[in-house]
Length: 527
Image (cartoon, rainbow, N blue to C red):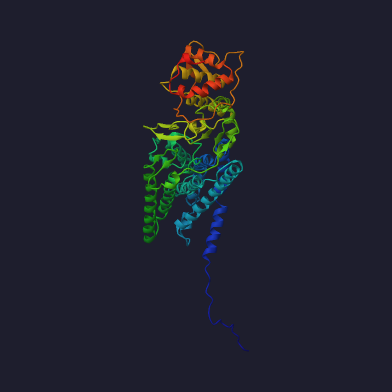
């Protein structure tokens, strides 16, 4: 009998360690068993019912909707995201798996970091769904401009920070009650932080729900006439990123090797430094003339240059030209001003067109912010009347009827007053002619004795055609908003002038309007 032996290989094959495959398998398990997966539809539903419908009700202006999107995501996602993160952070302790997981090959901080990454990924998936819908609909509806990514970046940076805060809280305070308590408390902290904002140099504007000067309210013209200033967004990104890094690094401090603790302490210090720098920079911010926060250390002077655009103009006797972002408002604005434009077209000193301009902002004492238009109107040679739409100043989107009514009430008297002369030193003749033109344009006029309609019932007043003499330049001063109030004698003179034939009115104004503006015409000299 012969004994046989199995041949032994000359060399042994080393076992291959596929670390990348193991990490991917671990991440797949974390993603499939993550609480944020079940909270994803909840987060999307909260955003839909609370913020989406309000955002879509705003005018289709990129900057307005992007700012509202940032505020909506920051406020709507904090409860479901923080709650899911707290639940995942306390998972090992709640399931009494601490001793079992301690003997595994991976350190505790790497296991926790993997669960945090999975929670953040699902939160970002919900965020991308909301971002795609809002930006997709806006791209279809917007008449001008392009997507604004700085607010979207801040909204995205909120989610890793929320997950980090919730995750570490759950790991340090493992309990079934920690998740709901911390989630609700975090929402109230975020919401109430805005109550502490005072002026444009408030450190509390670091809150991610803030997209601009909090005391000034929404600005419909941000990024329309001038470029969007990302200074506040950059500081908020520094704060959120630094906060997330510092909180996550704190997980590796207890129970780790000395080298790991030193590294984690250094990373946490760097994160706190970045977050503190962001807060400090926000405290140096100032309100610029265009309604945005500028930070000197982060500001790019190129943002101060106006955006070039081709205005959209009406075909009225005096063209009304608006920024293309407001193209949908052009028919209402032109129709509201057309009665006044027909009355002043062709007169000496009348504007050649109405041009929309940006509102100007100025920070006052405390929380006061003044919004308006500086400088005289009209401007240029030939003169152009500068128009600020009411929703630029109020910050509240108006219906078509509301916009037309406010434009007519605010800019109609200004156009007439700038033509004939106004102000505290306006003469009686100037007031009478302004009242006559207002009557013809169906603008309200009141007197001390007569408080009826501006045009007496039963008498038709025809609009003046543009057959007057050619335009000449004249300097005009701003008018006072409101109903034109005149004395009884001025009202009677205005009625007498308005009763003249259109040709006679046009001829008299063409020859005497410069003298009228100079205050050289008396009330008795009016025809």
